Length: 464
Ligand code: SF4
Image 1: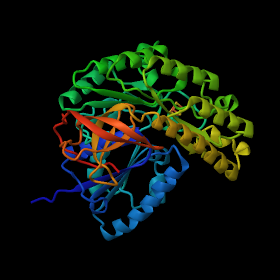
Image 2 (image 1 turned 60 degrees about the vertical axis):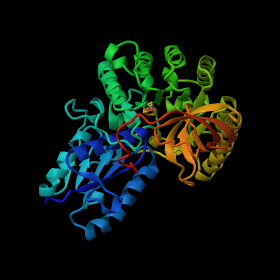
Image 3 (image 1 turned 180 degrees about the vertical axis):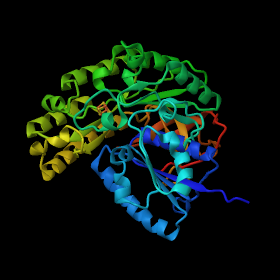
């Protein structure tokens, strides 16, 4: 009897990478491999990489260093590296880690199973495409066989690449320009997922609200897409990430407000509150314009949660610029934010601004001050929810206490509650009343079960 080979996928970076890993898991499963119980026991380990931040490549090469001893002990182990960093570093991956078997890029994820098979006989293979191949680009075909961490919640990539040129970002050079999938293809995928019991879809793209501009050569189709997804029977929650503030149009806000299934949650990356820094970043909006868009969204969409991204210490950021960022954060009153310290990525405009780099100790202090402001608004937003009834989609037992259930509200907030005799299972929907608001989560009391799980598959893979 042939022994079944096992695989593990470790994912670095953004949700698009997490989704690519789910697709890859589906492809490897179709190729006869099964998910390993334990990463270290796997016959194939795939590292799906990201090159957005500096520590991402330190993390990758550090991980590859650790895997070398595993490979020395088990020569049959295959190691593959894919994703943005592989696309950027290409042959360098093998130069720095000669024990890697396969290197594939962002444009040929679907080739990974075949490359792994070939490398069993041919040794190490590097295959990177410079542009998406319509035949093999995974992002452009429905992900119906993806192995999902939460079987009722699916990511759906609607476009690849980005047409913008933000000075700090390497995405356009490693992922190329924007290419949108057809509306028919997306609706087919979402309808099929709904028939499999998927109830939540998160739409993914580098700049989702410009979706379709390359198809129509004129106006984007994102608002229409939201309405059509919201009309699919069985799809109860639609989320999306990320829109670019300059492209957030009134019709998108209207579609969010008028489509019941579209969640009242908006992630709108601002990056800085200083007009000078926003201009140096080439973001295409001012702080005031950003706040006006936020105000329009909050006025139109009932009970909207808003999250954002900030970069602290962009080259040339002065004390006054940073004070503008603090002021914007205080005025915008975000529910939460991802705050990053600027790190230069080779190949970006910002990496060439070394004479303007802000000293590390100043950046660290600014970072902490911004986090304090953001923590205060996050806590306040959560405290304001005490006493409200929330619809909670159960994810499973809490990591800290197996007697407590963790769930997500429609605003995307993590809520914990006890429901000992309810029989609630992952994927079920419950009504809860919020009893406590903390910085990053809510506590609640169980009220009633709204419905049981709808999905048919079990949780098959933890994409780490
Ligand atoms: S919008 Fe800017 S930050 Fe986002 S992917 Fe495009 S270039 Fe990068």
